[in-house]
Structure formats: structure tokens, C-alpha cells
Length: 123
Picture (cartoon, helix red, strand yellow):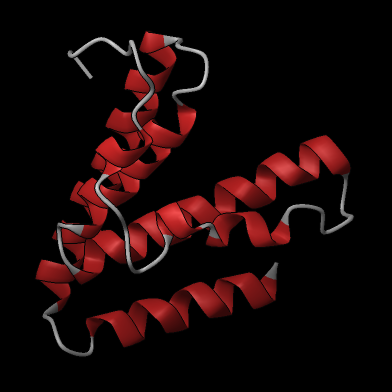
């Protein structure tokens, strides 16, 4: 746990090196909001096979906020993966590479690429 805290803090400091703290933190908060909105929409839609779209949309929207949003998306993605794996598989390290899927990496594709056929236009 201490190591993950150090890694998060270091990535925060490195991410802020070119931006001011206020801008970076505002982008991070807005990016976290984007991730939450995508998650809420996914739960509301309850549409089979659309989870990739909603995950990609949350990451894409957050990353477009700037370095703070991209950092928030990465931290939320990695920590949520870690918690999910802990509950599902125990401390086995299962699913460690899942957070590095192409739809969530630095080359973030347009989320509509992952959109399921028949998903309402509301989303």
C-alpha cells in the first residue's frame, strides 16, 4: 500500500511539472467527474455488451481535459481494477494487465468505435 501511495504521489508531481497546481487539480476533478458520469450512464443503460463503450468514453472525456484529467483516469482505472481483483481473486495479481488495454492507453480511440449496436442515442 505504501508503494502505491508513493507511485501515485510521484505521478502527480510529474504530471504537474508543466502545469500549475490549480489547473492540474481542476482538470483532475473534472476528469474524475467524467469517469463517474460514464459509470452512472453505464449503470442506467444496463445494456449488455456496452461496457467497453462506457469505459472508453469515460477515459476519453477525462483525457481530453488535459494532463490532470488523464492522470485521474489512469489512477481511477488502476485502483478500481486493483479493488475488483482483490474482491474477485484475492491477492493473486490476476488481471494486472487489464488496465493497459488499447481503449484506455495514451492513443485513446474515439469511444464510438466501441459503441454497441442498438444502444440508445441518449448515451
